[in-house]
Image (cartoon, rainbow, N blue to C red; front, side):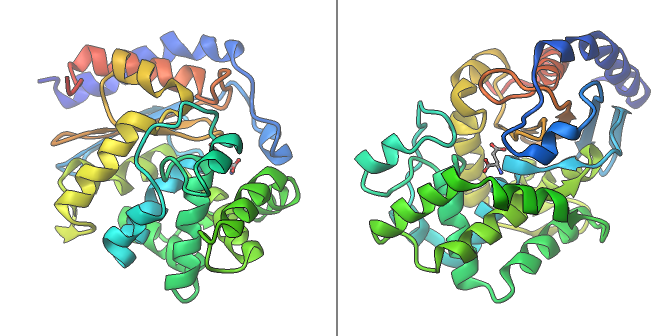
Length: 308
Ligand code: GLU
């Protein structure tokens, strides 16, 4: 096994090696505020189950959580309504872009899975309908998981999404027309955009997701965050659907449950070992960070982390 000082050195080396690839991607601009982020920034953190965090580069620089927030919301919804959730959302890969509308029409308002936009909006509906003060419940949940009060929802990102969220509104109204959204759509969208606007850094994000690498138990305080079965289910969904329409390729190359967001973050869960978070804003045509993907791929290869 790699020794701690070797892991820090390895992260540094890989970061130097991958950073120049940022020119191959493009920072998301369909949410205008996101396009203002400096494209050359790169950070990586590895949190292990014993509580150690290894990192390199801009690992304490906050970024926009975006779709990685779908994991936290999903766990909260599973905890609140259990198996009822799976009557309203499926667990299959979509084979479509993350914000696609066509499939939702064909499949009568039942989203393919909870980590594409339609599915995540449905999950937000569950939170709005089953938690009082659901926006602060979401933030409280992440703060508790990473043990830091500093995590917040960036108001500028939130407003930018709200102003440019017509496609997400379309998804929500379409599901509502099929009777698959309970609360009022504007309220559901506010919840969803608020989650996506969470500002967090690589180290905090890696630490907060450790329970998924540890059968549902957060290692620093032994708190059961979700059941072992639900931790398994989240990892299964991330393995098949977490990397947008490149999930198959990611499983093929890397072999870890992972989730990416248009803010440029990618997290990968390594069961019984820990969590990797890499961040670099420029995205490839699928919406995955070019540098973060390459970093995680090389690190997993170097340490032999693949599950398969
Ligand atoms: N807030 C973004 C959206 O709804 C999240 C997309 C993503 O990160 O995949 O379009």
